[in-house]
Image 1: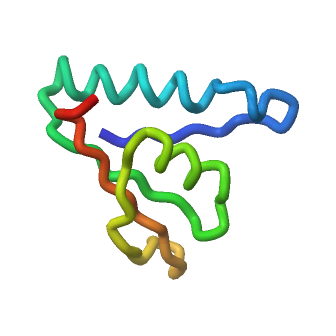
Image 2 (image 1 turned 45 degrees about the vertical axis):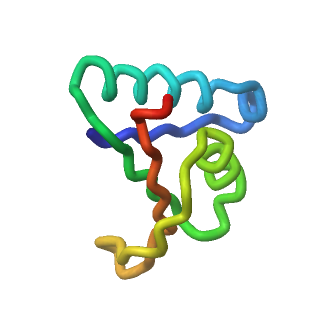
Length: 81
């Protein structure tokens, strides 16, 4: 499962990404049987990193992107959700 979102500036900081993430992660765990989720974001994306941490994800390092850059990677245990 790939969870991706874009929140336009006017609607940021209103909880839309958090709510959408919680719904998608719940579906992944309960319906698809996923045990964990891997969250990737570009370095410097403070809002996405804060969201990942607030969901309970742990930093798991970095991984290269297809564009030759890198992603910060977080792992979230869905069994505790």
